Image 1 (cartoon, helix red, strand yellow):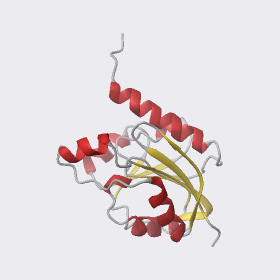
Image 2 (spheres, one colour):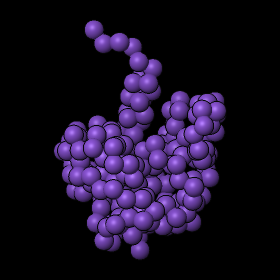
Image 3 (tube, helix red, strand yellow):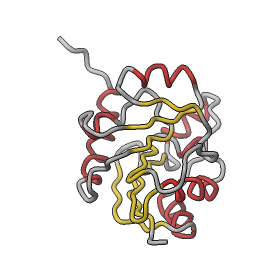
Image 4 (cartoon, helix red, strand yellow):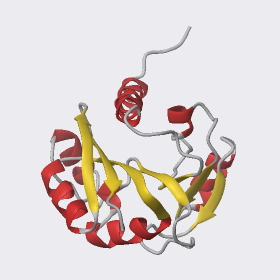
Length: 177
């Protein structure tokens, strides 16, 4: 018998919200998962899409490797890839660790093929974020409209969005270059 887990319930809700957004874009031939963590992104594509998982933490990359993700250790604003490599980029649970969103969007744009998409989740100011601040986490909480404005200023358009209890999910497309 499986024990009830609030964390698992919340994570499952986030994954389902992201899946619904991704119904609006073609499945990528090559995906970059920024802040790959433990490889949760594989739940979005049923393991059928080749995924390059980038994270600064070597321990997280070891966990992601068990999910058939090609691990790359690097910083999200200094991406070690050529231009026009990926059809899609996911950045789930990463935005709260990014101090400069403009630099983030500027780093992502070149590695996306023209018309490529970015799934970006964020933790808006809330009691949940406040709890994490209280526990000593250094986080940047943003409202969706703030992140959308920054993304638009850096060459993206917001094509869809949703929200769950703890996060907002934004789907962007890179405007034609």
